[in-house]
Image (cartoon, rainbow, N blue to C red; front, side):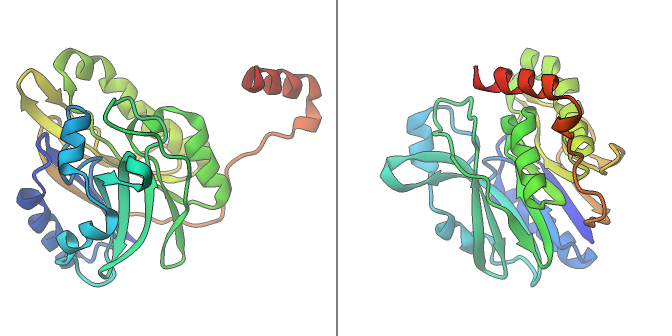
Length: 260
């Protein structure tokens, strides 16, 4: 199947980059498009800014009405949820219908409340999960999705950071995506932001990574781009499990480490 990842500018100007991206997806027969975290509305600077751009997933659907039939879009946005909660979320939309919503579990931004679920989504018969930005630094969210059957991990990112932080995290951000692909035997499709503004910088970690860790496509540093690549997800190689019975002592030590 053909997939795409959009590397947007720091402003995440949905009106600017999205029509061109969707047009190319239509021309090239792309089936799955991943947009950056907070692509709609941009990354809010605080709670008040998040309130100003927050919307529901259903209200986001008209913004994707130009998507061609059969294209599944994973779109990052600030979600206004029940009980006044605000989440960094990704809506999964196809053919004008909302198929599901994934929420960031470990937000570092004070504007956001943490999500509490890891839903499995589907494009036809392909099961895939969504891991949003900082969540990709942890083993567990991606592993739980892979164990649930995900063969693709869509990763909306937004590495719009102070320039010195961006440069410190550059290698780690990219290596983490390779790690999640290899340890879960999944394809990883990551969409990030790039550019500079007011002392902030996004180098961009937009890339498509194969289950063996090979990077089959990557965006240029610091520039908006749309990656398109052919992938071959299948269910032939489930993620590796360790057999705890082969070393009970090690298993007990692991249990102690996670339970305290």
